[in-house]
Image (cartoon, rainbow, N blue to C red; front, side, top):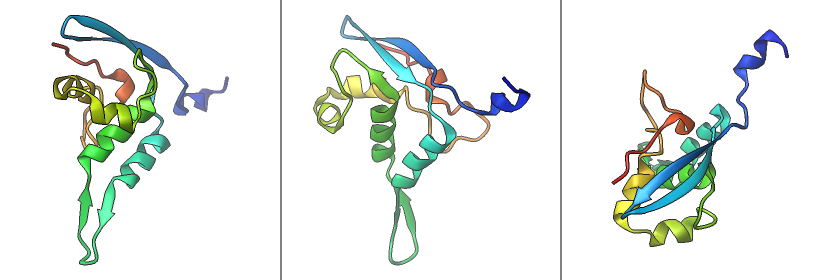
Length: 117
């Protein structure tokens, strides 16, 4: 291992226990690399003919959840799953996702811990 290896992301995984309506749901999340996060951010911008730019926060949240949740009791975290979940459970999952644009704070999905209800 060389001294500059610290700049590279690792394939770290972390188990997180979610609780919803008394049911414990263990999920495994993976650490997101800088490039992966930027690819997702890029997908979420829309450029208008008038030159304006908009950002789709819903799309960002869904894309981050699909990419970072690698193991869950419900199987694959995909568009079908996300479109069918209870709004309150969606709010719990949403807490796992780092803000897209947050300066000076932790924006790493892997290090976030959700508060559950």
